[in-house]
Amino acid sequence: MSVIRLALSSTMTIQAMATASTVTLSAIAPLVAQAIGVPSSFIGTYVCFLYIGAAFAAVSGGTMVTRFGGIHVSQGCLILAAIGLIISAIPNFWIICCGGFLLGLSYGPITPCSSDILAHTVPKEQMGFVFSLKQTAVPLGSAIAGFIVPSVALWANDWKAGPHFMAIAALCVALLALYHRNLLDDHYDKNAHFDARAVIKALRLVTSQNGLRRMCIVSFVYNGTQMCVFSFIVAYMVEDIHIPIVLAGMALSAASIGGMCGRLFWGIFADKIHSPRITLAILGALMASMLVVTGFFSESVPAILMIAVCFCLGASAIGWNGVYLAHVARIAPKGQAGVATGGTLFFTFAGAIFLPLAFGTVHSIFGDYYESFYLTAALCLAIALWLFASKGETSSQG
Image 1 (cartoon, rainbow, N blue to C red):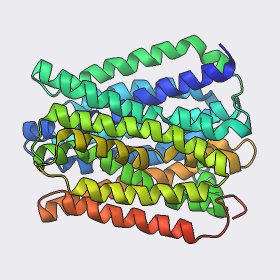
Image 2 (cartoon, rainbow, N blue to C red):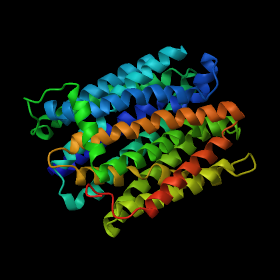
Image 3 (cartoon, one colour):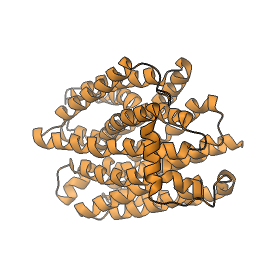
């Protein structure tokens, strides 16, 4: 197996497992909410805690990768994810949120790890496709969680079985990474040391260059939208549309599979037209339209049609990430791909903190999820129009 294939398969497996861990509770949110006596919109608060941890871990992830190597750091993250999942299975709201915070700490460095590994193994002219292919592991992980976690929970007649099962899976993937750790971590710097200034350095890097700054803003909104889809689609379809949770889990999986297909397509598309700005603008417009259509779901809509719409929603709302990450790695200063990725991910994860929280708050005010979908659609459309109106490409030169 070539080094590129090994790097790609390794980063995809780790990314899929890490994502599945973060989506585990969202896949069974109605069951958890009923068990602990809170509304299903609690998942917005849980996701907020998760991505607070992820944001701070991501921005320091570049330095950790430089010091220890991407595979070493990823293994530690998966072990921490297993601990977070076990804590998230304790039936107390605030303890569950603490488990989410630990899951966030485990998830934050994963993308800087993979970006650093791929940046050292993949030629620049292939980065758009390879990064998009790697990022299909995010919706793949979500699809796995959507299929497996509700089924395991219902089979065991206990929602806690879902997180316990995923914790075991995370530990297994961490062990498998031992096989190729030394080969892929051959470029780490033993003299690199983390300090608080690394966070400031990463943030200063991404806010001082026009292209990276623009990516921060776009990823804030787009990732927030993606997390609203991941976090609330099951609760929305169970509570407002009144369909069984296993079918709602299939809708989440359909959105995730759509995201996988979208990430491949949009990566190729962006490389073909040589315009990340236009690609991301088109994606924002598609997100807005699919969110509006999703908001029109009702009990009279056939399940197969809802699943098809969820697939299209995922192709846009989950399909943007590879284009963004490849471009960040491409325009980052030489040797700073991990640091630049971590810096932009601080804002990416900030979107995952605030937008799901706002989404859940709107639900609490109106009593259903329709208005939340419409307001999120308006925000995506605003970003799309801004990108269409902008001059030049999203590059470090502006």
